[in-house]
Length: 538
Image (cartoon, rainbow, N blue to C red):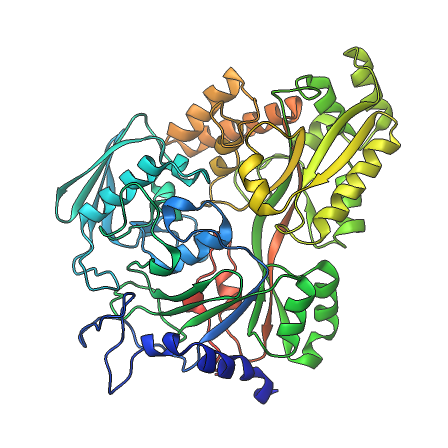
């Protein structure tokens, strides 16, 4: 299998000379993100692998400027190109220093960080407290429609008190701020990034372990090694090529034929089953990591028919998550009965507690008690190019379940993600599908963005008691009090059913023989750290 395993590396070497050039050598200086030479005394760790990594995906990248994205594919590149003040180490749950030397609370609304000395961007410019201020302020000034800047909402101001010290002044206590500073929204960018506009993708660069050498979201993105990187992450390869595929079947063929080393997001459930059974004969292994990705259906509370709670509750009473998990996903997802997934502190199966087993008669009674005439008609939207091919089958199953009850008349509609992402929050859809990958590994990230009156979905949901609970979740430093508030919030969600969670699933990747490090990076943070991966056999 060795010859086939190296085909992807050979293809990258031929097509991606920039990637390899960025790694440097004994006789030439490495190039930085803008093509200028860096000094020989850079602190970057010598890669332990002679091979670049080729990763195939069906994901769609939007912007790698942190001020212009709030989606996993784009953020994942950001995590590998930029540093943040703090990061959650692999396999852990608490923020630790990244670009910061230390961070501490001064008081309930003041947070101070001291930067490590000697940090450089890939163009050789210094990373100072001024860069942190610039990064946060431009996020809030640009207010990109993607919404990532909203994570920084409690930061009232940020100031550099000296070259290495940055102080965050909050509008209200926010116990989650250290977690927020680990997200891509808090990535530290150079001063050359415009204050009121996005940096072009092919000109993006940071102080993280990788540089962007070429950028074409329809074909491939090439990453090289940042010779000025001085962080703690080991470099186990000499560059990365992200190869994009339109079809899951094409991605499966690519991993089987050795055109890519890793297939990550997304393979169909039938492809995964086939590779689990037969992949070893083709030099392919299926790797599974912890996952708290969720999928959910939003009901537009601001308009008919979902301004009536009984209509939402009746849908919650009918939907059979077990049937979805088995008949559509073949057991590759786990039914989810609450907003916080299993494995996260604060998880309660609140929908199961509230509604029990799927029951059409109970749903009919809910509607009758509220005086709702049936069948209730609504449009239900989903996208074919975001969460896997099975999404269409899932909504076909949900349509069947609801219409077979005789209580609902469902019209399925679909849009590509490019269009969908711009309209789901404008109030024009009756009901719509979305997925969620955690911004950080804390239950608040499954409650606050969705159920606070000022939520990113803009779907009309507002509840004073929920807002009060969210205040506790955000501000209380007593973890027991926070978990209790989270559990109470999940029960309100089930009672009012503004959003119906459907499933959660693990992370899955297919890897070629000899590729290591993938399993280690598939942790609950949902960050694929490219530096962990090596294509050299031990």
